[in-house]
Image 1 (cartoon, one colour):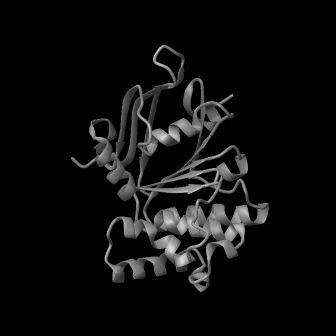
Image 2 (cartoon, rainbow, N blue to C red):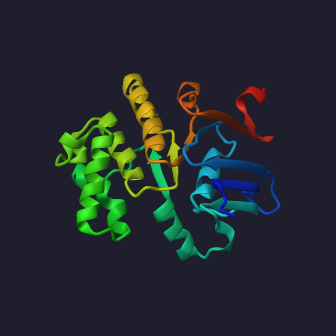
Length: 229
């Protein structure tokens, strides 16, 4: 039977030291195609740690992370890297675009890493640039653009290879309120349009409310917002 979940966490536990207290323990979560989830929490509760685990950049002390039906715990480093490259997209607060490449070149990078043929790469890149509203800027250098425009590049780059899961870490923290609102709406619509599952890590209740549901991460685990407090 095919697992309908894009992402499944099963009793996930992480400690910074083997003999230390748990950052979090027994986290359980299921995320399906098209679902967009916001995770909130105070500083230090493990939001960045959770993000690193989901991306396969770190390993839990116990429990399982199943991405697209594949259990990360049984894969070697090379297999996890390949799975991440194929199945995960990232949008960061700091953008992480390459300033001396054009908009088009930045967005096409994930496809180059996956050895997608040039004609298909060009088609999919153009399609994503149109989707995020920056097609007229395709030949401009990223360093010449505004923060909101650069974040649109980051969203296009994160989705161009059609990942199963998109992870967004405080993606609007460096933007003015108007640009932030536009980016949050764009992030939501593009996750839906590309049939991805999305997780937004944020401190902002306003940002979180653009997601389908909100979970709070704290010492008691992952809980729905209405159950927190």
